[in-house]
Amino acid sequence: LETEPQFGFEEAKEKLQDNSGIDVILGVFPFVRELLSRGTEVILACNSGPALNDVTYNESLLVAERIAAMDGVIRTALKEERLLLVQTGSSSPCLDLSRLDKGLASLVRERKTDLVIIEGMGRAIHTNYHAKLTCESLKLAVLKNSWLADRLGGKIFSVIFKYELPLKSS
Image: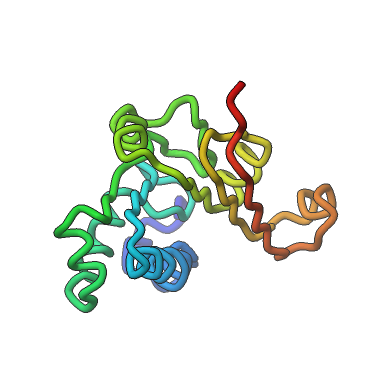
């Protein structure tokens, strides 16, 4: 990028890989759609700003709009506010729950959220694997780092799917 002044957006599209589209289009939105079709309300929180190849809040709005144009479940859920897209307040592949966007934190309380799904190696494993929540949680990730896979007793590209019951209040 720095050595070729003519290397612009079109050249980058041809040469650089990005897997966030696969995660969002083939993973997150079909899962969200399934939850919605079962009557679940969904708050989909995305990074406020860019971090590596993670989808941002603004990108999620565009994707949701395009999917809604083709899919009645998503379209209706957006219209009825059973699907809300919000930003985390983060521009990192990790997620510090103590620094969540205040609007997101308020929304989670107001909607009496009973399940939090944390997706991605940085968010689910690096920063929140041992986090205990006051509602049910699901931590999902693919291990893309051999050191971390070894440390967790798995292999590279192993899938983590960790379901936890809420922290019991005393």
